[in-house]
Length: 121
Image 1 (tube, rainbow, N blue to C red):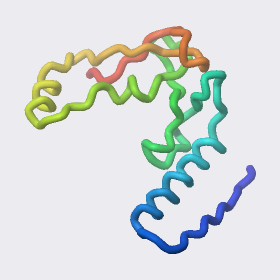
Image 2: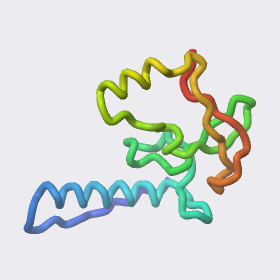
Image 3: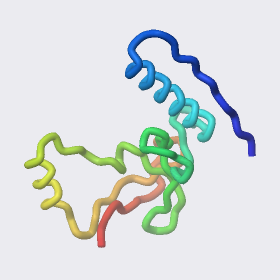
């Protein structure tokens, strides 16, 4: 296993914005170095190595309902986010106890090869 150490120098200016820039740069280095990219520039692989949601690949390795191994689009996993508390409660109350199905893709991020179930009992 190869480990790399990156040193980023921060000089004058706003400490908060520079910290954010350094953090974003480190997250991008982490994502770029850990995951390969497909022809569309999407990273793909297991999320087991991700240290936060920001460092997960664009396509996350998963096993579909029928045992097919493929990838989930991170944005499909996250789903629609509520904008208000009332909207969050309504979304929670309208969820099916069986969960929801999302597409399972080949590593190209385009070809649907199965279905993955999110949630459920």
